[in-house]
Length: 504
Image (cartoon, rainbow, N blue to C red; front, side):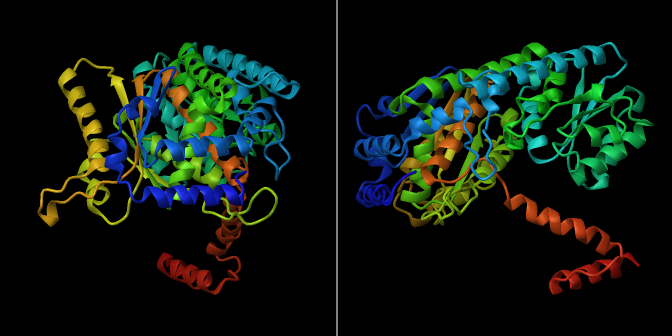
């Protein structure tokens, strides 16, 4: 955790750098090379962040003094880094990327056994008439698998078409099922507790439409509830309390990914993440890509006081990445209380948002270029496309490079309405190609960066108590909307009355 002295030092660097425009810093000789790292299929350029060598050296020194190396060792060895719940966080074990301690080794063995069961169930499904899979889950039980299947659509070697159902609105389920054949459809219900209301309601609709539960599968820690739903234990895959939902796509939660991509490509996804795990685990802080990423995020949030981050993938296959990162980052880092129970002295999670280029250039980029608020950006590009349309890909990459340059440097043609102030910091992550390995490495990078940011702020990246309060209130409101009692809160009581009046 950074000390008060560290925060004062960071703010001192920021104040000094206010006198140096970003375009001036970025023009320094050798900066592009000095502020870039390449790890596996990812080349990362931090050259357009509003930092100089002095500030960067200070940040790296602070990372060492804050004990990030010790924090990483604790994570990989399976120590209880989830302090409020007394648990380890062993999502790395799901892809054999954890350390060698006994807790991590036991978790890796469990994960391998689960993958063997996933492969066996997939093989049995391949011998059936099933052509379509409906994946039912919400939050971490939906966003990661949905992103992976969509991003890796060029690798759908499996015979199954996978569809996702998360929203509680019954119309979504009705529209999805209208285009499927119940005799050729199987369902995968994903809920750790098997008590998530949205998932159970959609699961019930799916079960009724299919005429039974014989082709329903569950991913859950609650075998008894799954069995009561009609799903035999042989069709229940495990979930563990040492993996949070937003870190779980590598586990049996990714059963639908395996069905869509095939076992080999699912293994490649895990291998890419394990490669990034090894880099983060074994590389000194000064050359560690996750450390660079985390330090940059903390610098922008606290030294520069920038409250949001725009995630801008310049590949439509990554269009769902901002949504996945909204949960990963904001659920992990949206805390104001430190591990010791004290109030965090600085702001923590940025608001994550974004969209896929070049479409978003014609929507919100105007505000990013000429609005009063400075919004840092994370550009993600793909060097080699999965198609033969070279002209279109060159245009896409030209726009990516141009926007990052324009954000940083701006332009002043002498006419105020045409002035672009520049000074918008950005990081550019360039993938060799969008392969399963590259996607795995990219997502694992973000996971490790989030953990390191939490360590710098002294907060817990692995609990999410804020999610529970609204759920508890909603449980009571369901019956009150049906006329069974009245809400205590006067505003809610008035709104319930308005809704009931419109049902008459």
